[in-house]
Amino acid sequence: MKIVLLAAGISSRLRPYTDNSPKCLLTIGRACMLERTLDNLCNYGLTDIIIVTGYRHTMIEDFVRNTYPELPVTFVHNPHFESTNNIYSLWLTKKYVSGHDMMLLDSDILFDKHILGQLLTSPHDNCLALRHGMLGEEEIKVSIYPGTGTIREISKTIPLTQAIGESIGIEKFGVESTRKLFEIMDNMILHHGMVNVFYEAAFQRAIKSGMMVYPVNTNQYLCAEIDTLDDFISAENTIVPFLDAEHCRLVLSD
Image 1: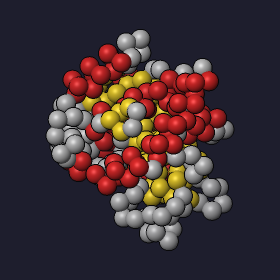
Image 2: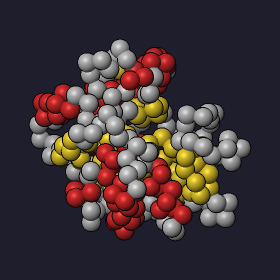
Image 3: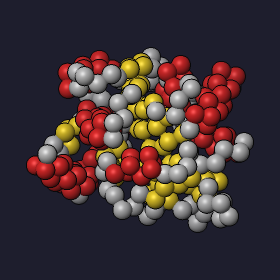
Image 4: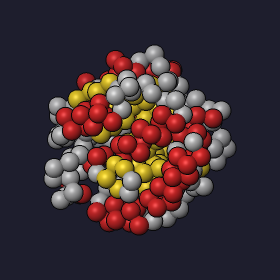
């Protein structure tokens, strides 16, 4: 399985924290977000990792090489990170991912490692980590087909009355679905110039063409997406102490 980790954005809403650092390298609690994610992946033996960089890319490359010298990470640079959205960053990984299962993660998520275990042990090739709870306009929302329980729609514009929860930014796709997604992105980007949309727009087209994607309820585990200063401070005071305590227990038990 190929792991694609997207870390190209400028993250202007986190300024001044991100004036001199990419978001994923911001320290929160015991470690930065990128270190936490890589530790979680390595815990499950997920080491075939592709990181898409953009803003201050050399800082990310240096951090990974110095902190994980034995980890065979492939770096893909998005030179157009200032004018494109995450669909373009994902599309740039096509030659590395084609012919493989794929797990896709955003790099600005703090999450309990067991969420990865939930996706890996799911009986479905295609699944998406979902969180139930309070929803607003900002979240990427999900609705389902009542009969099958598969995802019907994924976007920010789903009416709150129809949404069952939000996507937290971690997905798993089988080989054939991965091929289909990149085929769809080829059409969107090469023929329609759709470089500035969220990758969920490609998911939606794939779902409409018949791809079945199943939500995985992750509410029993902690996670948070860090987009703003308020997100950062809230996570630092609430989620991070529990994640760090769990890490401490694991270290001590080893």
